Length: 286
Image (tube, rainbow, N blue to C red):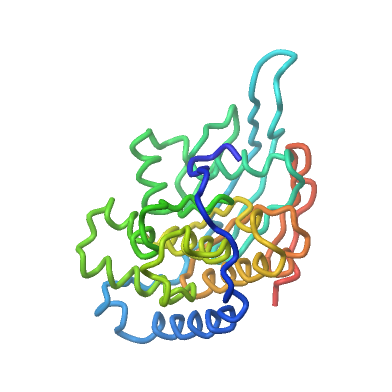
């Protein structure tokens, strides 16, 4: 992957009690969901509950082209891609390695610039934003989850989740409340003080998801978030992402090449050789 956040992480082996903790994590996430929806709780804890979505899709991509290199050696990563991502849905972007998934996610997330075409996120054309505008959008309106987790090894789970809030200079009490809520949402309240090297791969990815949600983004972009996880843990992470879409009111665009994970998606986009070849409702609808 060539996006921002690709880092080599220390640690991340399976924790001995991971399988026993999974059922507890589900229950804890369910309780966090109830707290999140309780009337008045958001105001007291400094947590804003997402309002109803506005009209129109969250993401619109029109005739997108992106190539790398030049002349005979050029690699055409995207060849006229057009698609949309409805608000409040988990949309899976499926394709083999090298199909253009990462390139498309980087462009939608404002991490790269297309050769031609148009991208609109939340009603805002990315081409209308300068560098400062793109930075603000990535900071405030888009959350990123990467295959390699991207956690800071010397910080605890809670400190990693709180990094985006510190960058925005959120007051300490509000920051602590938000971090506690998010760790509860992903089932890691009991691991708040542990560093990444003391957590399993699945736990590290849940911390990364919590961090991506810290600033209450409207759009969550996840590039192969289960790529370094075993099949069972990968399904747990996708299940969590689907729950997050519901509880946090966000839209999620998740790249994967694992057909077993598509059952949790509301919609599936098939990308092959830089072209969308199929788009339709996912098995998770209904």
